[in-house]
Length: 260
Image 1: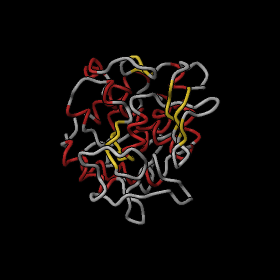
Image 2 (image 1 turned 120 degrees about the vertical axis):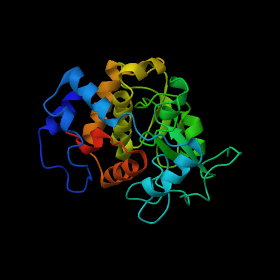
Image 3 (image 1 turned 90 degrees about the horizontal axis):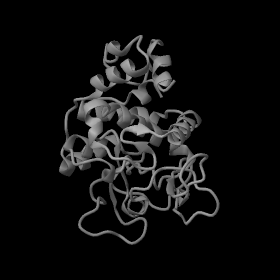
C-alpha cells in the first residue's frame, strides 16, 4: 500500500481529470514507510464532518450518480450490462422499513463495518467510504469481511456479488462478501483510505475483525486488496466521486489520485 502511493508521489503531472488542488500532497513528497502514512493521514484528516442525515443522503446526489441520472450502487450495478433494478436518488432512499429482497430501497453502507469501530461522527459519516447500496444486499453483507468465495456460494445477488465461505489463501474459513470484479478495486481503495485516514490516535477506536487488527490489515487481507487494486484500475467513476467528495468533505482519497 505504501509503495503504491510512493511510486506516484514522484510522478508529475497529475491525472488530467483529477481535480487535485495545487500542493495538496506536497508534504508527503519523498517520504516512505511510516512517515508517508503519517503525512497522508495529516493531509486527509481532519476533514469537514457531514451529518448522517441528511448530509450523506444529500451528498450522494452528486457523488454517486450514473450518466443516466440513476444512483450508482456497486452492489447492484452491472458494468456494461443492464442491472435488475436502478434507484432514483432521494425518492428511493430507505425509510423506516427494511425490504426482504433486492430492489426495495437504497441505504448507507460502511465498507469498513460500523460494528468494527466505536461511535465517532467523523468516521460514521465519512463520505469517502460510506457508499449508497441496495438495503437488502447491505443487510446480507452485514459486517462480514470482503473476500473471494470458495466453492458453492450461499447466496448470489442480482449483479453476481456473492456471499459464502472465504476461499482466499490465508483467510479464515468464515463467511465473506465478494463484490463483482469490476468494483473490487473500488472497494480496496476505500478500505486503504480508512486505514490511512484513521491511522494514529484514531486507531484506538477500531476493533479487531477478520480483515484487520485494529486499523492494520492482516497479511491475507492486504494481499487480496492489493490484487483487487491492481486488477481493477481506477475508473472515471472513482475519479469523479473523489472530486465531488472533496467538494463536500474537503479531503481526498490518495489511492484514487495516485493508484500506482
